[in-house]
Amino acid sequence: MALIEIEEAARRLARAIASDLSLYNAEKIERGIANDNLFEELSADIEEGRALYNSRVSPELYAKNFYDRAIVDLLIRGKGHIRSKMW
Image (cartoon, rainbow, N blue to C red; front, side, top):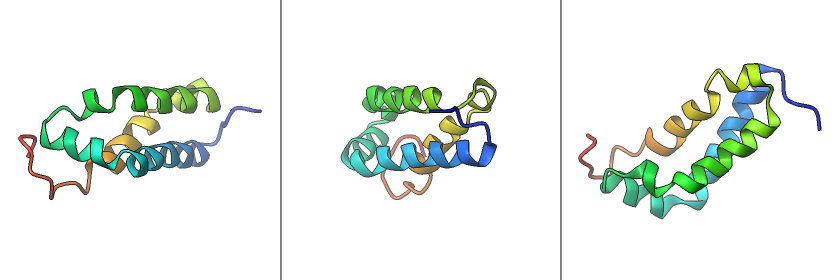
């Protein structure tokens, strides 16, 4: 399979992976935000997604942090209703 070399396609892939993480780990996300340890709670899942993303996009696009931005957008943003020390 050829590597993704188009920015928009790389963004879509990053958001799809982050969306799956959000969908399948809702309880972990809520617990991680509430306990201020979200990244520890989801460490293995986030790294598995990162490895998938890295294997599918060109190194130039990987360096643009689309995956990390998607993680923040889909796992954290919009979760302000969860009581947390973070906010």
